[in-house]
Image (cartoon, rainbow, N blue to C red):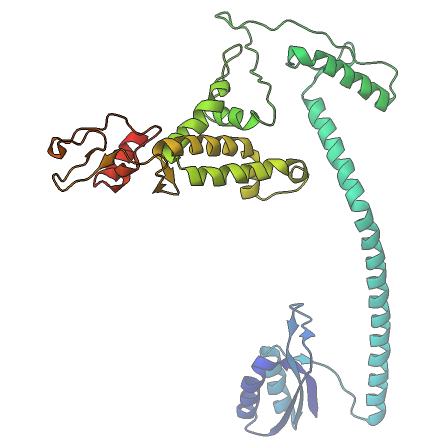
Length: 368
């Protein structure tokens, strides 16, 4: 008698030893590995398996071998003893496999056609769902008047944009092709006070130049209704205070050139999708330009070009052997007196300051 079936490869050696010891060597075991992983009928996972054939004799050996195969999770398959039975089993298996391949092929084809159809429809469905979601989100902001069966919207609007709102309602009526048009009623803004009246929200008109300054100010706080907009002063104060600390002619020129290059391409860049760093540079292109221009101005005052002093007009100090300290070139009759020059350096710091032992302390304290 014999058993045939498949067993996981990792259990092959252990099962062979167990069979040998249980039957005291009175069985013949042959393993042949399967070329590709097979799906386990119990776990539904792909497992590398091997085909086994066990030849034995006796009912006692049969019971032992059956229990061992069950313990090792081996699958047993019936196999005819005669050649005719074996040919019949092979024919049946071949026919079943052919039928299963046809079913799987048809299923794959049907799934592919269905998914292809769905894939073509997904973008349109997505747009429709997003549009409906936006519509319902907007409708949730409205109040429903059950008596008149109307939606009532209460919103704040800048006074200069009233006509734009009317035009938008007219366009909406035309596109939706409805019989009744929307009505717009303008109410005066409530003044804030101590009686619990609603305070209108703050709105400041901005353009592509002032938007970045407005964003900087509003990151700290938003001015109340009818208060002065501090962003107007920030347009000058913010880049100038930066330049006071950063001032350098060379670095300022680089910043200004980069900003002007971005500004020259702003029409093209505005239509592109940018990463976070590039978007930050693009949004701040005008403030970077002003910081570069002011840095050039303060750099001329500090007399620095890439941290190197510029001797444009000639130093007004000179060192002599009569003293360890410098004296003015036009007031050095007595060098030991260390008198300052009568005519100071025309613009900015004298370049001689960069060569002094206290240059770093002096310039840092001046800038800060």
